[in-house]
Length: 225
Image (tube, rainbow, N blue to C red; front, side, top):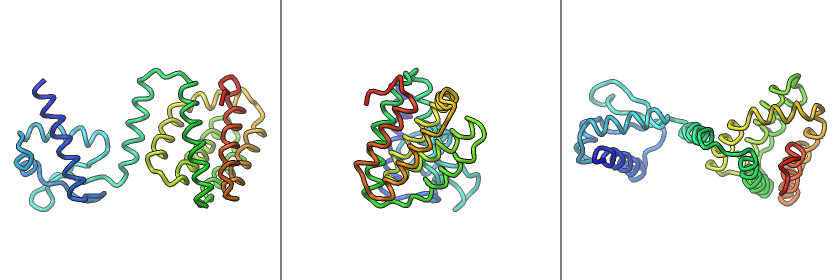
């Protein structure tokens, strides 16, 4: 137990150090020995904490001495969060209705905020073009995923975007099955056009409604929003 508490405390202190020092992507943490001295813990505890941070993609270890020593904060921390969330979702044994319900809450909010903010819709339009040219359900879902993640990105909230990517990745198989079950993707395409037009027009209420009805079309047995 003592080892676990020490390890968790090291992670907490490293996190605090990053925040207090205002470190961002590309910045270097102090070398292992100095970090252990500053935190008042053993080097092995620091080493274990850094291994976890590296596995999560938060830092990238560097081998070197002097100014080249110490781990570097990665440039894509949101990717690490997305991967971690997807792993937890996969292990949680969540029912599809729970994932869809959460998606609905997130996309309803995201579409509304994207419209209100007058967000750039070029990524949405590009994903829609990709869907038009798709020849298989898998290819359609790839661009469909890009479209819905672009809605989250357009909301301006990076945490919402990370959660959305995790949800979409965790339900990719179900999305492909839904497209195959529908056969004709015309109704889904019309839904996407409606969402895009609402965001472009800055109509927050219409954007939210369009998302709700789209999910009901894609997953009719689960619609209850």
